[in-house]
Length: 115
Image (tube, rainbow, N blue to C red):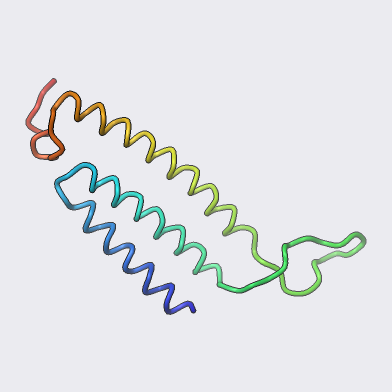
């Protein structure tokens, strides 16, 4: 399962970099979204892909019984999802405002304007 995930992560990173190198600002934002998804999958895969019980400690015990899931990668990915959504919302508003002013989606045309 992990080699398949590694292949999927590599494909997502390659697609994200390709999209971010395009001239369209919309494609740049799509590449940014793909990049954040690839990073989230990388965190999950590097933490180890295994099924386990929730990390709850029974009353009176010092450690959880049996194999448990690691909560740290889950917390990191959840935080990354929230941050990525905020960045995406900001980028969409920024794109809309830039398009209203410049009337172009091409980054080269946006670079030539001084407003």
